[in-house]
Length: 125
Figure 1 (cartoon, rainbow, N blue to C red):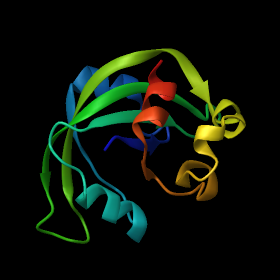
Figure 2 (figure 1 turned 60 degrees about the vertical axis):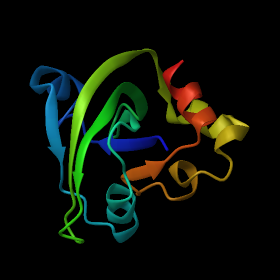
Figure 3 (figure 1 turned 60 degrees about the horizontal axis):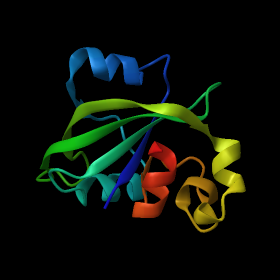
Figure 4 (figure 1 turned 180 degrees about the vertical axis):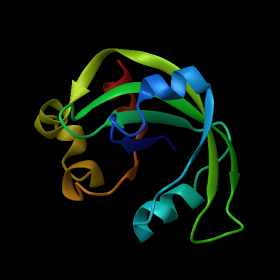
């Protein structure tokens, strides 16, 4: 299952991930988002989404490893992928029927969001 990871670009951007190549995705405290992190599997596809002024899907990544032994703070290592050809804005997401029931639209503050394959394809072109 693909997932979308939200990040504030002034704190940690997709460009930062590209420079570092891999990172541990941390700082997630919302119980639903933590549950989504714990549910990730090695090799799963990710979309990196910038919050704040940008509000758009900007790049891809993949899950390298998951250590869910600490249920409150799972350690998910991710690897940078490529930038999307054209960032997809939140307005475009909200206008697309694929996302009508998505937590991305319904739970705006959720920082780790599961995606369907069709949603992933729409966001990554």
